[in-house]
Image (cartoon, rainbow, N blue to C red; front, side, top):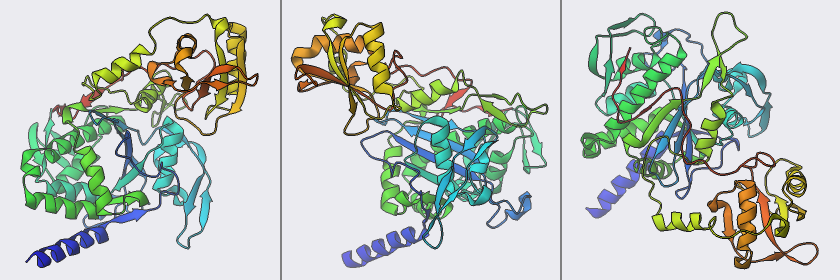
Length: 465
């Protein structure tokens, strides 16, 4: 009996693996998520009309553009997550995209400037890896993995969980999306669910930004349903989800097995819906257009949102799982006496900052801050995501003074061994990482997320109007 059950389980897992469709990430992603780090997952919804029953939606020849795009950031401690919607009509620069061809060769698909974000997929033969590169170019955040869903995915996944509950603040009869629902709460699945996420002319201002809010409401409802006891306690539903999910989604080549998808699912399963925030990239109407059809980045707000995600800052008020003792130890590194700037002896290395940053910082420290015992030590052995300051215990006073001048947080300070400078004298080591933004620009990591135009959490039920 055990042999028979084991054989059946093996065959079923093989069957699920065979269901999975994957495409190359073409080196655009980080190479896959890690259990001990924050996770950035790009979810792409395409308008490709393939599949049963989808030919009636018009635009039957669509190559499948990136029409719905969500960068899902899951915090390192899994206490919170941010789902950042990227408007399909946002004007961006799509970078050059090296793409693996069917014969194994690589073709570079030329980038284009000042085009809609949704053309990062499908247009000119672009694959999902091109959308990944565009997200990195736009936000500075490199996705670890991606998933692509088409029309059928929406229909089959909602059927598998028994529908999701949504709310309408008014009657809707949208001839274009085929959504016809009365005011109030409805359990939707299949064709109705697809119509719901495609509706835009009958809600809000009738544009894509209004549709994004509707899609965020839908995904919040799906998240609540997936994490509910009625789903998790039902073997039938879970098996159906596994069957449908492996067929419905196209994933990158780093997620091409049921084992890898299970591991990702377990990490996502640690989230509480009340700590999953949905928001949208801050944008403005395109000033170059008389008839408003596209949007541009809001340069006064968007960079702060991107930086908060890169810094793993929660958009909800949530208690981090990090031990308080560890927090106190980090904070203590900034407390205590400080040396005079003239007594700080430091070697400056470039560990991923723009070329010339070490010399720029050296000049600023010497000319503006009086740190005369400083030198440019060239490039670091390896690139770092964050700027660090290493020092020996006896050099703590110097390190605190330099951290204060640089605007470094306690987490950037790394107690260690002393090193010697070019004169053979003991020195502390400042390594400028990829987060370096210029000499004199504070590098203290924010602890509070910036204000955004709109946000909602997955536990909240909102009614579309």
